[in-house]
Length: 208
Image 1: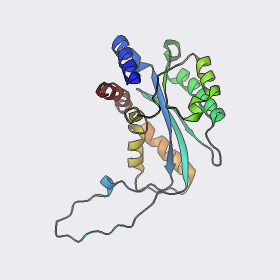
Image 2 (image 1 turned 90 degrees about the vertical axis):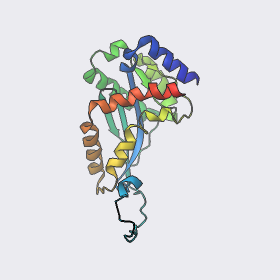
Image 3 (image 1 turned 90 degrees about the horizontal axis):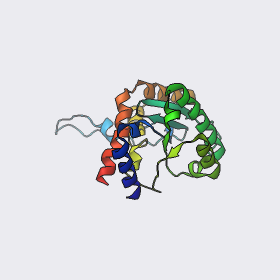
Image 4 (image 1 turned 120 degrees about the horizontal axis):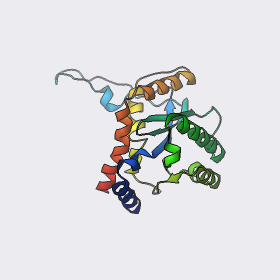
């Protein structure tokens, strides 16, 4: 509740410029084989038609970890974790350094006006080294509760949900094919898709 009130208070005081400064990101696993969703697998049938038997499919154990940062205008940075590595504070700090460079190149003036970073409280995000790096950048962080279904609308509910639906039923032989498909999908999305994701924060936090 406190996080929601603080966010809305700043939005009402600063208006659209507040949303303009928000940069958000998250990680998601992308499998080599993603089964179709229930909605995708539905098809129209006559009520007397025989029931179609479907083989139960499980998500492939081969997968790639993607980290995506974006704002209301589109994607800022896409990073893929190397096989056999894990996301720790050091790796995340390296990603944030690349993010700062991407903001400098793609969003002229944003570093000057001040980045508002919206991320969850995963250990690599909240580690001391990570927090020190963010402060050294002069970035401000939007308070994020330990767990909230509402705040998940940022990336995993708004962006990654549609990515997984797009990948449903597709099969990839190599990690490079997965990465290329993810990059192509993110690039193909219209700017209003990302703008809507940021705008939804206002709507849903108002409901809170």
